[in-house]
Length: 180
Length: 204
Image: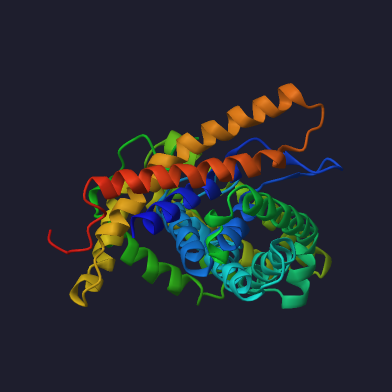
């Protein structure tokens, strides 16, 4: 009980920290934030329930007024803006990542790739694109075209998430609760 | 920017967080039913007036809060400019700006504590069916406490990496940062357990 409570709190804080620590730069110089990496890690490390809860905590407090979203954004305006689907999709993404991670029992690296792709890309972009299409009053296809550039960044994060999860599993296997 | 709440007291501080949230729900729902550019333009003026009525610096802060929307305004403007459907484009842009500005108004004039109080009140029915909300309050407190700690640690690790490596790939700190977080969690959980646990009974 204590362990779950604390893990949920500190991983929510980890998502915040990863969004605010100075930019993570890709090899070709595109600055990306690691916030969605944090959300994927919640799933691959903590599993579906705890990972989803940590991300939900992060989202709820961000909406309540903490400026924790990458770029220092936050507040209720997020629910009226074009990013609404992505905000709502964050906890879903973490939950799906954890759910897949708990079920795909190959080696940790492969499982993490599959899980963070299913959760952090597929399960995140479905509500994300729907929300943006509604606010901007455009078709789903047009909206996806608009955000497709970001998919590349997220695929890179899927790869990083896999290697990070594997490194954590090697260092402290008992801490990767999705495998415990 | 450390906070999203406005530094000055406004007339909106007079209302409770619950009242403001309820009003925001009603107004936002109604707003998405309006399909007249003229009505939306009038509402935009009313919104600007509402912000300006609380002073110029408050209005400036409000404008600053809306700034992240500029890429969307640009894209919608360009799209509808090209397709020559400026009225529809104007509606979409104005509706989005008003909706976000109103929601921001609630965020800017409501202290975080009041928002958390509303949240806990909304969760209270869980107590009636035997689920304690006490761990939720503790989790929120721990979360807020850990944010500055982890940001600081991330910056320190980043500086250490920069001092030792010529590469720029900052994602390398994610592994040690996550491991340190997992170890912290273990220590804090033990400390909590030693002091009586998070308490699942629902007295208070």
